[in-house]
Length: 405
Image 1 (cartoon, one colour):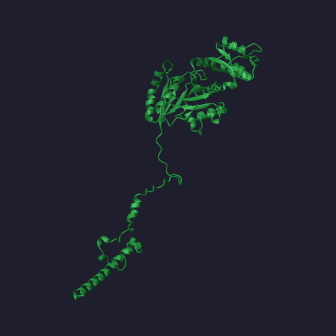
Image 2 (spheres, rainbow, N blue to C red):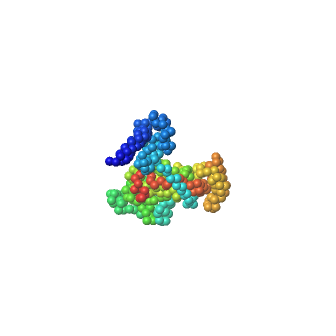
């Protein structure tokens, strides 16, 4: 080998060796930065034996607070959702629920049908049946009912046709199915007072019979057969019901009127709330409807009725809460005129409406139609929060909503 090649190779080896010696401290520094010496770098300490002046400026990481993350780890972190801080108010271990939607505001319209001198219900029956139902609420004629001794159903049918002016008939098939004789004598033959419905019940209860209105006639039938005939009635919500909260009223009817006959305990009767119509929709037998009507008349708005015990000098008062003070001010100014224009002769020019406490309206009027219509106007303008109650009980199955009766 020529001498110049030998000198070149030995020079190359010695140069390579010197380069490796110079690069070794830098490699050791990098290893210390990413390995065991990382905690020292995080504390701002210098690695012993390495002059920081000789290091490139861009490689100086002595003041770094943490070791750099690998690129793959950073890419993976960008796809991972950031965990939110738990809500301190929520129970431990439960995820925070999404915010609920704002409550729905309903504005049920006032009804002139409800503005009557006393509390009345409306039944979904033909006009001829409705006329007989009204007739049953009328008082007995002078002298009451006077039947001959040992009177039978035929004698009662004759009295109803001639004295009460009601077309009556007897359900012979139901009597035969029950094993009852049409010639059975009535145990009670005289009733001196009360309305016609109460008098008929007094005459017929002893022989397990009852009157119902069907197909334009008053039908005397068995109690078992009468339970198969259900009538739908619409009952106005009392003025005391605030903001459409009718569930307590429904539960009260369930508990006090024919308690074992409602659908919540397996019976045939059902109550649904028609908030847009300010009414309860009730399906039940006519006998139970009569009990519900008595319950509503005596339990609510009794002091508003013109045929009650209220003295002429007394002025009934109702207090209503309004959504805000501005709305209360507007209603206090316009309510009397709105009611009297709608009611006409049934209105009350002497009525007074006063705003107190910012959001309360005090309505004073001796006229029941005025009080009822005023309460329904306030309910309509003020609005009712939430949905109409779909079921009568707190835990009714969902399928009952689609088939209310």
